[in-house]
Amino acid sequence: MEVHFTPEQEAQLSEIARHTGTDAERIVKEAALRLLQEDEHFRASVRKGLEQANRGQFVEEREMEARIDRMLEP
Image (cartoon, rainbow, N blue to C red):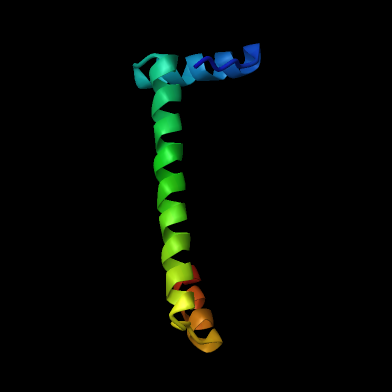
C-alpha cells in the first residue's frame, strides 16, 4: 500500500520524526495502527450498546445527564 502526502505534510512528518528520534514511516504506521485499534474499540462499544438496547437495557435520561455532568466536572 502506498500513501501520498503533500510536500507540507511530508515536512511535518519529518519534523515530528526528528523530534521523536524515529523515522516518518514508523510514525505513519503507528498512527494508522492506533486508528485501527480505536475504530475496533468504537465498533465493539456500539455493538455492545445495540445488544443492550435490544434486551431493553436503557439508562434513564436523568442518570445519563448525571453521568455526563460527572465526566465534565473539573
